[in-house]
Length: 475
Ligand SMILES: Cc1cc2nc3c(=O)[nH]c(=O)nc-3n(C[C@H](O)[C@H](O)[C@H](O)COP(=O)(O)OP(=O)(O)OC[C@H]3O[C@@H](n4cnc5c(N)ncnc54)[C@H](O)[C@@H]3O)c2cc1C
Image 1 (cartoon, rainbow, N blue to C red):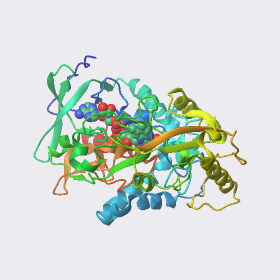
Image 2 (image 1 turned 120 degrees about the horizontal axis):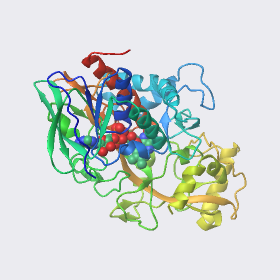
Image 3 (image 1 turned 90 degrees about the vertical axis):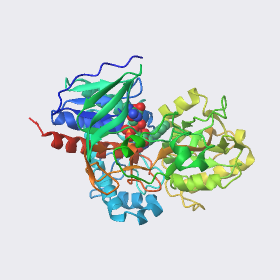
Image 4 (image 1 turned 180 degrees about the horizontal axis):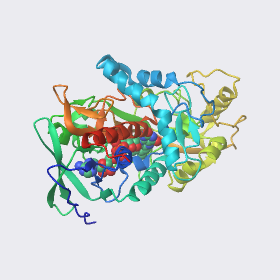
């Protein structure tokens, strides 16, 4: 697809903002800039907008909100402490800085859900994902997965404004600047034609979990043989380091425990994510017919337990784990499960299909979920698991899953206003960053639902800060 033309904007005193990347971080920044009547050039490398954000399948965190099953009347302090706990060892460096970022993330989460709902996004269903001590991850009740619902709603509203210019199929190949100040970007069109655009820059180009040969090989060569949920695409942090940006946590890469192994193409290096909400709604994991972990522990922990077992194959490195759901979960996550069954990633079957060991494990889990047995693994939330007396003919939904590279916690170091630090810990003028391109917010393990949240919190903050930099013309 040919790239759309680069619109001329005035120099040397541009009054428009440049946003690199049309995922949720970029669109959130754009929404906020429009509120301040700032013209926007949103530049997107792909032919279609949305990035990885449009694929998000479990939801976005927010607490306290009216949609949570147990409405919390005061602040949900446990969201902050769950996030700090999940960040783990990383908290021992840059402690105060990380604490500030996490406080900003969690304190603004309820407002983010309100804001998205005001934009017209349905977020009325809430699940408890791994590492969370409360249900906080919001999605809609309809068929559209949360990422697609959020992206299409925001995009539609942005496209109604004459100040919003989206250019697809154009890659930002350089961030321009002099001294400690960013002044614009170099763009390369799909046809290889170069041009420049001047103005302050919000960088929201996403992570590098799809950059197997490049940045992953550089920072985590040990993960080289793992499959990924991300389509192959190069990471973009080097464009920021070229203007002096400081990177942190680059070796912290999230390996999600459940990517679907497609029976039609079991060795594919790109896997479809088995949304964490399936476990959040009550689903269990079995290896050789037995449970082996609290399925609602953090992604890091579950992956760690699985990868200590003997892999089923070494190239790609894969394990044979069964994700098992009952009809109660099916009712609550029908649109997701119907889609996975349609794709051939899950099958509707009966427990007899999994053998006698699995029957025993499922019978025991049913007792745990009903409250008549404690869980060996410490699981306390069973959400919509309703099967009380499993027998060989009980209907279940099953898919084979394996750990997959999913998300990169490292990136450009920002502060609460999404300003980017250089190596001397000074802020780079005219540059902001938000979303997965940044580092420091999640430490060693991102909680499910907190990436979309991070995009909105720090994307909107970047929009506000950039508008202030340009001189606000709010009406
Ligand atoms: C399958 C899947 C499911 C997920 N589910 C969830 C979930 O339920 N909840 C959650 O919180 N998180 C989830 N995540 C993680 C989350 O979706 C992403 O981390 C987040 O959306 C990143 O948003 P972003 O705006 O930073 O980047 P992206 O959405 O990836 O957008 C970045 C955009 O920048 C563009 N770009 C890159 N380089 C350039 C360049 N040089 N010039 C121009 N454009 C460029 C890219 O093409 C892309 O469109 C999921 C991720 C995946 C892969």
